Image 1 (tube, rainbow, N blue to C red):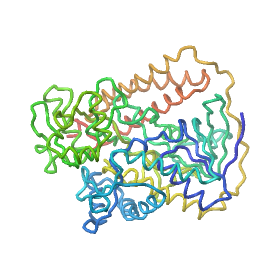
Image 2: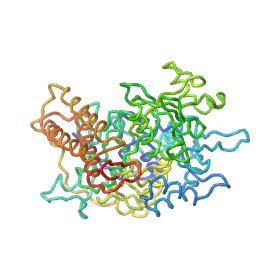
Image 3: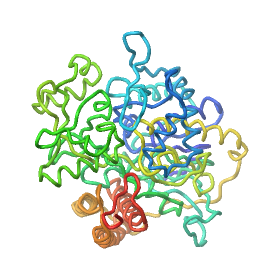
Image 4: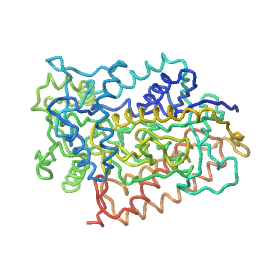
Length: 524
């Protein structure tokens, strides 16, 4: 075991973590910044974002329109000041990303080919084919590689945030205003050693929690790690009932993660059809396929329940196939690999857990309720998304708040000179290697199936109460196991999935009205 001291510790290597790191490293060349991620350096939720990034770019568009679209998608549960802040800062952050090397598609006039997606009233989505997230991720990594004061630590799994809980007898309650973060205990996955990383400022940028559900578009790394750590550290966490289900994940029974059929496909003109071939969205919303994700997902859920079918279909056969392939080459090739010719065949789709609209509560500067701890990206609840996220606002949010967090740290530079308290090493006494990893994988699958079956697009009081009963048992069983076995990524992920699932159910039970992505049959 070792103790490493750094000025700034960033947990996560997607757009939220990397953009913040780049800003800080360029402004503070003499300060040390560590970016720790539990997988390789380019594995993150960002990497899998297909559609693009939203910004008012065209002179026919306006900030007012983007703001209203965001508020309407969020069922007006958003924070107006945050929405305005993000939308008005979008163009400058996009210009900066382009200066860093991001390549977005151009149209025949050599202007940016602005796409349109569900919930947007104008074409304002900048994209790189159907792999925009990957393009942004690679751009940021190239920047990082040219900044010597950033140390990148792949395969380093953050286990716990270090707070007073670890070195005092002080009783800590959720939201208490005198909790401080001093870094994190981090598992080196190559050596299986848990090291202590002390930091003056810690930034949680750990992404989402899709693996809390059995059916999700999220990669296997999306296990709610930031939410789990913040929950155990007694940070304030809000609005976890607002889980966004993406309407159009490719229907492949038993396949997880599910392959995403981008929102931009519907923006390009694709139609949703039911088992009878009817274009059904016109019955649910005048915007049809371009209604917001919560509306489209519930409509699909209704069609599936009514017909007894296992999926609905996305019809792209009427579209210009040459242009379609140019825009969505990976989607076309994926469909082709399972025998679907998008020029002739409908694409089978169904909703899948996609995005966590709530999260760790932060203020307008990215501060959590714990001193010296920031949160950015999907793990944070900034107030931008309200009850349901508008398509292509997530990458944007991470860029804007990355800039804000870096600026705040720069304005409080003297905080980086403070002394650390005496922090104990992680205690492994009395733990042994698990004899049967099946116990961990069994509990993980159990949580995922409970959430899929009982805490889906449509919920009820009875389903939520049953889910909570099952989750309480699994939580107790997992905590007993955690105290006995040698720490591994698998047991840590299970703890975080448990915590995230519990919060989703608890906040769902406490919610008294149907808004956005949350729908309870008993609240009609």
